[in-house]
Image 1 (tube, protein in one colour):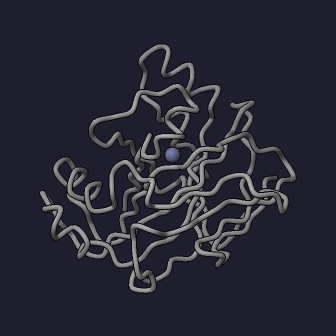
Image 2 (image 1 turned 90 degrees about the vertical axis):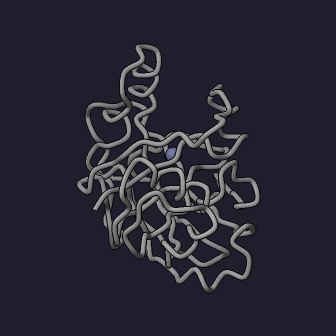
Length: 203
Ligand code: ZN
């Protein structure tokens, strides 16, 4: 399986990082070795001094498809979950300055914790889903899909022009504003509509 991540998909987040607002989805990949499941802890790596959280809604692909049309894209995912796109911001900043790829900053072991998934049918309106991240019981990020620059369907259509999507692939759909650093000992809890789906510690 593969993990596709969309960057700069909430305007306020792009602004906080002084990034350009894209006119088509920006994306990158993480390998399956970046996944953390079942609320297992994240171990802070030695190679970075500035690992940052980015809470994101995650789509689970339900069937294979290529060159998917936007109007059919909804049929290609069946579940929505929540995850953290951990980013070594210090390394990413170097990569950005030098024009290098982002993998070192985004694709390392444990860089993609994911929580439980719920059926997309539980959402009456996929363009109005609230989600948030608390660290040590303090709200640090909250988002709503109404603020997405590119909708779930647009993302799927665009990405599938480049990659065949397969059952079980995951798409991280971008983070709202409020990203920031983690430290050892932190507890991260992520919610969709007040339902806690992810709860783990930094060790
Ligand atoms: Zn992200």
